[in-house]
Length: 378
Image 1 (spheres, rainbow, N blue to C red):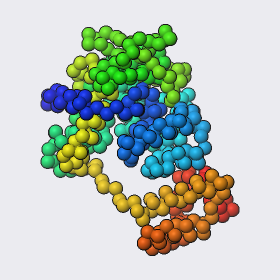
Image 2 (tube, helix red, strand yellow; image 1 turned 60 degrees about the vertical axis):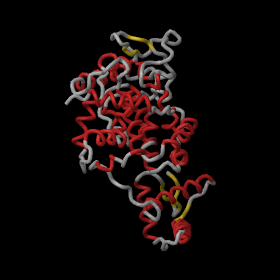
Image 3 (cartoon, rainbow, N blue to C red; image 1 turned 30 degrees about the vertical axis):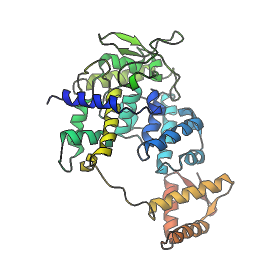
Image 4 (tube, rainbow, N blue to C red; image 1 turned 135 degrees about the vertical axis):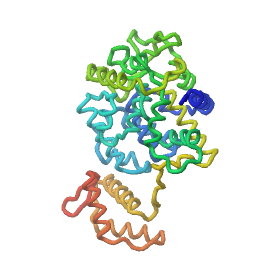
């Protein structure tokens, strides 16, 4: 199947619909990873504010790794599942401990980190390192279903994955050098995207390397190299696992070179392609009946109000509030406060055993601990 007409359409729509989001102005893997996790359950407008606030509080992967559990949970409140905050901290600790703060580029290594699945891993690879791969999330599904599976119900991901792979451009040697900084681990620090036609149509607006450093490179239309400027990364350091990271990216690029699309021009990179897919998919969901609901993987989230999830979130919130005052909460006081909330909402009282069960779950997951009958954030 010739996918060029489809790819041309998506790229054109991507330029027209481009969203200038703050995490698109960086190649820093820590900042991009954070945006990928936040966007899993929260509207873009809210993430724009909370992403910046988080980076003010935890400006690097090192700062997040060193932060206390209570501080991380407090910063995450209002952003969905609290377990994602714990996974962020645990993954940051692993990146610092195992990789000296330098994010790995391989799918295997990234998905071994807590809370990072295949889609998040490829988001980091594509948006931080411009490496090709399968990035299958809801907006990407929307575009594929709308154009390639019109009116087909219950489409499984196994039918979408080959199409995602076949339409993602192979960056070839030049994209690999971009990820590796032209043979220097400084490349893992990422290049400044500047205003390069919204990141879709070329390299940095500032074409010169700064401070005489050898920056990441990007192919020009003749297959040559054009230097781009770099900005300091929050999530990586310039020293560390240079050889290992270079080997991972080279092996992965060599293994994956065949399944991917041939770039249409020098600006047709994995990073630019997936931005176009995301923006076009978001537009389609607003203008046509949401095609992603025809995916077999689509599930409607259960009601939050009155659910066990809501009670979990409220218990975490109350324990955080108590900890801010140097206090803890016992089981009886938690039951009383939860009952007051439930009754105010017109729901039945909460059983003591239910609250105890939730606390045990939270303790097992690393949220809190009990000592002498008093519960506190771990």
